[in-house]
Length: 498
Image (cartoon, rainbow, N blue to C red):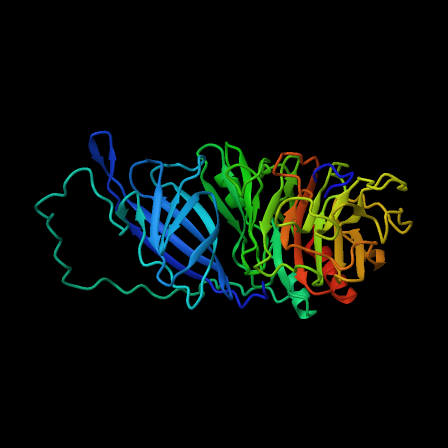
């Protein structure tokens, strides 16, 4: 957003998930001698909607260490890649070539690296039939450095009598518990007729059926990445995976995955990320518990932010109505511009009034005349942080200083918006504003990108000054009812943030 601010698709079809694992040998030369080599490629279609899809690809090196890699494959049905992270790509017709980023060129023996992308399809979206790593096709064979023996070892003749039969156990084996039946925030929004089009969290699933990855971490010791999932469907983050992977080194959060199935994954705005000039947040700045389980937050200490162009993957544009919520912290804030979560510019520039529609939380008193010192829940509509329906201070505003805070915003796109807040550990939502849009903001001109941790135009030139904490949040299509928002708040309280 600018002025006095310092730099600040259609509904998706049901998500489709498919996995293809191809493993194989790749002859790689080291100096003048041939080295043992092999690879495994896992290709997962994590989400699919009409005309588009998201995928994650993991390369596992089964042979000698690789320093610099190139992976190629052919799409069988004319698919094209539109956005890729953790690597660079070129596409010539059906052939796609992905090369390493500067930080993930090295893959040690039995190590892995991964990248993700969004793409488009027309008639069908089959998985690729084969992959080629550094010039050789993968096929699940590791070339040995020494030849195998020419004479097979002797075999032991079969026993003349069968072994005794082991009696069955006296107690049945444990069974896998079914997913929880209690609806979670995005189930609640869907039931209210305003489905989530983006759902992000580092702490827990936001759908009762969600059993995928929440976020990705990258460690500094070897620049490999690891996805952090949930303990069970609809459950808390598996922090033990992060603790093990990041032991004795530093990890950063590189991607926050979208749980809605629309591929609206948030990548960090910086070199090696989606482009820009900031850094990914350190993954271990803050641990907490949710429902008694240890988890980690996205703890932004300035100079970190995350972004995604979602205008073709369900994020509302123009004057279309939308709503959103986030759980943040009232004890880790500042007045820097601008700790936001919500709808922003696809250009990553301050493009004028109404081109943003995002929740702001912090102590910035944009237009002056504020009462108290905050922090406050306000609306970042671009070219201004609005405490209510005008630039004048809204006397109904109040500060939220609790450790955990729920903030909501909804906007019908033409005449009305509402701002609410609450303690995320207890109590109901408090309505700060429910009325007309500020002058000059009707109709809204939303562009459909998603911002987290900054204003709309901060991060190309490294001017992000905000700090804040993000635990969970979602964006929805449509104007959610008060009853729906109240039910989401009740679920957040029941989640047990501590």
